[in-house]
Length: 84
Image 1 (cartoon, rainbow, N blue to C red):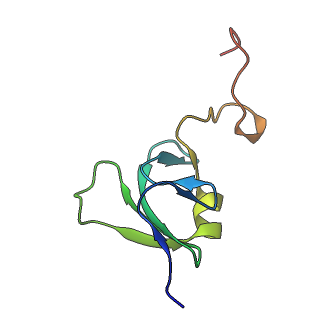
Image 2: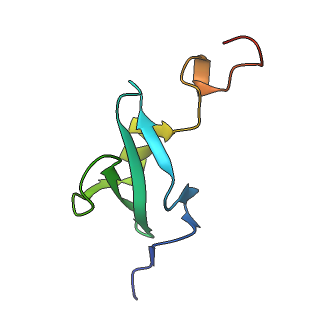
């Protein structure tokens, strides 16, 4: 059975090409592709295009959050308007 790689679209709710950041907010990564087996390939936003890293999906979502999520609130939920 062939392994399915997603080079565009979404697999496991991870969209290829989206930006994610670590808890400190200092590191932003871009999802390059996702394998059905749960492997995520990403690179740091400012890294060379050939500097790819591989991680399993559980570790990825434990380490990173979508870059558009506000880290300043419990659970990473967006701040209500006018509260930030």
